[in-house]
Image 1: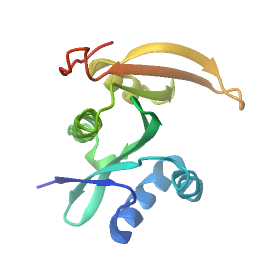
Image 2 (image 1 turned 90 degrees about the vertical axis):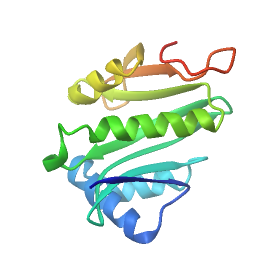
Image 3 (image 1 turned 180 degrees about the horizontal axis):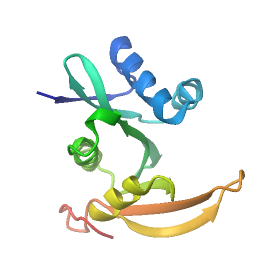
Length: 156
């Protein structure tokens, strides 16, 4: 049975190795991830573990005192379509909301359509599209986490 673990800051070495292996199988830039992550404030790693193996992860960091960025995430191919990405997202959003952040932001690409659809299904709004420095079309999405009364909300 899979279980969720989370870490404010870097996880233990075994968990980090599992995240990096999975990350590299999807994005092929694990070394770059480690370098960039070491410079990000208030990192949060959320993982789904099954039989001592990382089967999914989500990483985020603080953009400002009230805004959090959902950065990277992935699920092992053989576990896709089983709700793991939703579990990761829901845990990340709950933890970020409990930490006092009012909004969460993410960026994706058209090629990651399943992530784009998942974000839209879970209350994100598309706020911008642009071409990055490499000429890749990117999509910015934002979701409100707390309304003015301090209650949870699922849209901006």
